[in-house]
Amino acid sequence: MKISALYHFPVKSMQGHKCKSLPLDKFGAVNDRRWMLVDADNQFVTQRRLRSMAQLKATVARDGLRLENAEGERIEIRQPGSEADLRTVRVWDDNVTARDAGDAAAHWLSEQLQTPVRLVAMGKEFSRPLQAPRADRQVGFADAAPLLVISQASLDDLNSRLSEPVSMLRFRPNLVVSGCSPFAEDNWKTITIHTYDGPLVFDCTHPCARCAIPGLHPFTGRAQKEPLRTLASYRRWEDGQIYFGMNLTPSEATAALLCDQNSPTINLNDKVEVS
Image (cartoon, rainbow, N blue to C red; front, side):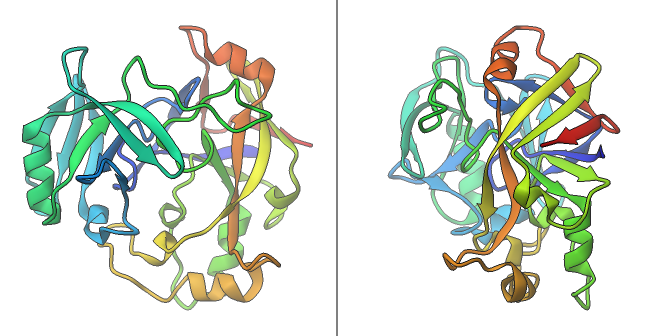
């Protein structure tokens, strides 16, 4: 098995991008979900609430972030420094400290989305520990884990059942693995990625339960019945949730490596082994 695709999503719930390499740090993939929108109550905002977020393209710029709408209008936002306002914001059940990205970003985004929002970023003081027994490890603004993996065979299996195939972007993974059977990832306990920097081991903590976002077009936000209707016909488990993909957390040894300044990098075609 091997890594056949890599993705990163700079702003939580905005458009993501394929990439050729994925540097890692203790929060997951560098530049992945390090920015987030919040409302007036400092609650996190995603496409579940504002579908038009799907129309905004976010890319990493030299000094921060570049946002662009479907018409090509854009804004450059500097990474907030120590002078930026601190905000206590909520991501699911977690209250975390983030840096406000400023009024210009808030104004532009509020106009684009037609509702008041502010953009926040992870700063040096950011901390969001995972739940026990992995409370010594961290996650950024991602929903549940530092990384998400899906096998290409799982998407191929789904698309074989659809009249119109969907892209992997519907499911917003970081890692795509080829060379296994469909939904093999359901049963993985650990995944070892053999990088140029040495082997990296990740715990497969829990399968990814799917919300409404895979039913939204990844570039327009338009709601569609597929692929969730078909997924529900064969991927709805006893708890009533639809599952697709596996959440990953670095093993204790790999987590120690990721705290170093020279963090390792996952590349396309890296060999993958699982247990």
